[in-house]
Image (cartoon, rainbow, N blue to C red; front, top):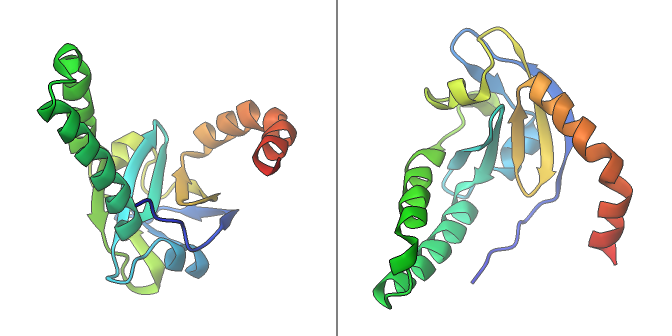
Length: 162
């Protein structure tokens, strides 16, 4: 049974990575992405962007999808898709990691995720509310994404509200 997000996360704020690749999130963002056990998922979204999710919500979505794929494998329905199944397995293995925010809503960006974000320590990142998660962007990648997406804002809003 799919879970529904408890919050509607929006906003954009610039932050600086410290010398240990830590990032302090706004309190309302930190609260929105931390589950009842204090866990958060950090995931690779697209090069230059990491996303942060409430761990229990993320895990439920992944568990539901994996269960469906297992069922299809057991039924012999994936025989012609082994390359795709292996590709998905590789992505599942490296895409996300569970973490906990430390005092004052601080996130330590794990090794492997740092390279994907492509921001050096001491540099700025953009922290963006993406309704169901929080995204951490390389500023150059963020501006490019905005250039691509902003012209479609009106039609997108209309299609989602019709």
